[in-house]
View (cartoon, rainbow, N blue to C red):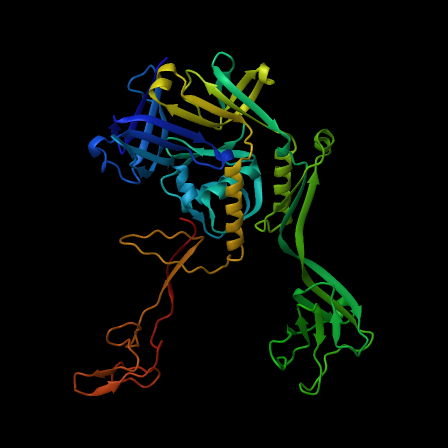
Amino acid sequence: MTIYVKYEISGTTIDDAYNSKVNKSISDNNASSNFSLKMDNFAGKNANAYVIGNEVKIYADEDVNPPTTNIFTGILENIEYPTNALDETVTLSGRDYTARLMDRIVEPEVYNNLPAGSIVKDIITKYVDDVTITNVEDSPTTVERVAFNNVPVYDAVKQLADLSGYTFYIDTDKDLHFFEKSTESSGYTFDSGNVLGANIKERRDTIFNEIWVYGDKYLDSFKEESVSDGAGSVVNLLYKPHNTQVDVGSPITQAVRQKGAIFGLSVLPPSGTNYLVDFNNKQLIWVSGTDIGYSSIPSSGTMITLNYQRDLPIIKVGKDNLSINNYGKRVKTIVDRKLTTPEEAQDRLEYELAFSKDPQKQGTLNLKDIINITPGQTAVIDLPNQNVDNKTYDILEATYDFNKSNNLTGNVLSIKVNKKIEDLTDIVKNLIQQVKTIQTQDNLGDILSRFEFTTGSLTITQSGTIVQMRSITGNNLILDSPTFGIIDSIYTLASGITQSFVLGKNLSAILGTTALGENLSDYVTVWSGNYY
């Protein structure tokens, strides 16, 4: 069997390439599919032939020349010109269209009670171009709440995939596949007939059977009741109070709601204030004294009911006793402030425990005379000498090494199967993501200033839009106007009269009105709508 390879860059077939590698990957690997290829550059004949951003397609087939099976579609991202004596070459490399997901971020977004697939569709539609969503499935898992704050689209989609037991990749038609793990079969069986070499490994350090999850804090309603002694003006609370509500009197149906303010904001409290809240010292202070002329301290024996909200940390812990009995206890701690509800933390705990309670087994297989492999699909592995007997495993990664020797022998492909064992790349990526999370965790707000520079039409990404307009109905001060927008300037009228332009004074000689903002119509809504 002979393997034939064809390369196209921006639709033009390349004949000078003699060595290339293609790595096809799915989300479990925390990486995009990528390629690299080398070609001749004798006398600089390819020095200016390619441009960053060109689309690259790679085709490969067995005994079919020219090949027609597209195994990779991606973007040219790097061009190098290595030279050694008379050996002049060009090296091109780049990623598939998963790069679009890695290069874009999800602006502050919150989703509630939606299938994971529906959230993925919305994110891709709003934040990513060049990628379609035909093969994004709506998972049966409903995500109760998930929030994203300036995280890469790739990481957001992966988080949704992990929560729902799904995986994803982008195919050669630039379409996103988001589907349940282990449900799509490749139809292949890999055994001694087509496996030239195999390395199957499993490790205890991948096991975690007791997991602690620490999320953010949330507000929980709390009530305290006490009886006034008629003298003390300070009530000590058990927690720092948010959104305090105080009622005085009994029974509660006859209680009088009190008016409150924040302690320390002013020397004297606003008129009519009954109490002040000292948040940091966990105190409620009754207003009284000769300076304000009255006392709000409830009389002795009066019931005081305080309803407020307290901060509680989100902490979840779970363990798998069977795994502990089999392998010994191994504990993992997860700290993620993006988890803002107990439900989110519980989902994360269940996923992590299910994934890591057993040893991870990863296999690397060198294959012969096989070309068209799609990571994410499953294959049957039958290698009893490696303790794998007719097991159905997920294909995690496919690596093609095309050169003259490999192409002639049909030995161009190796794959990884079953479970991804964390390596140095994963550790570094997780550390980088943790730093980004720390940097952006307090940046979520309800008003965002966005600046766009463009020529022609402009697409705005938002959760809803209202466009309003108001008209100038008289002669007003116009900011930035070359004639009527410079305060304190001197203007000479047609009649020869000079007039100083002073904001707020009578400018009838110039404008016929007196101040900024007069003679403007009301705002009129000219367009409104939701996602588009």
